[in-house]
Amino acid sequence: MADSDTFLGIGMYFEEGIASYTLHLIGLYSVRYGKIVLTLKWSRKEKKMGNQIHVTKVGENWVVKQEGAERASAIRETQSEARARAIEIAKHQGLEVVVHGVDGKIREKNSYGNDPFPPRG
Image (cartoon, rainbow, N blue to C red; front, side, top):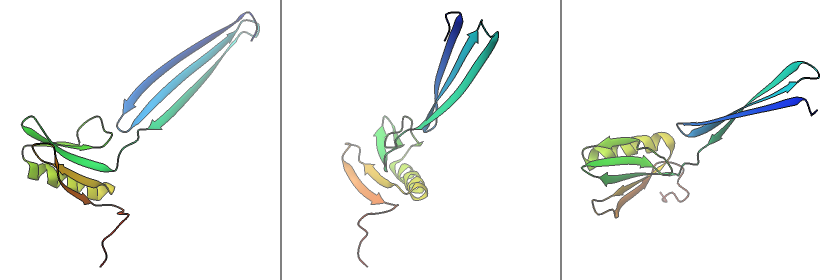
């Protein structure tokens, strides 16, 4: 890069769903050659999600939340409604459902995906 060249770099980061995105805009203005060269680069990174979905009591409601997620998948008034929604999600995504009691202790665990140790018939 010559002494009369000017370098400009701008970055932007945002998250959406289970992925985060980074946008880089890099510019180089050359006085010697009288032109601007711009480079635009996107990068996408998947967030690591767990293989379990939990049903827990939060306040007056029951929350369905996948391991590693920032937000709840569902909020229901009763544990049975939350459990039913968790099972629906688990069957679709091949996850394990972990149902916690009011005291936070695990009451039930069921796998709805690729179980490494399936029961013998």
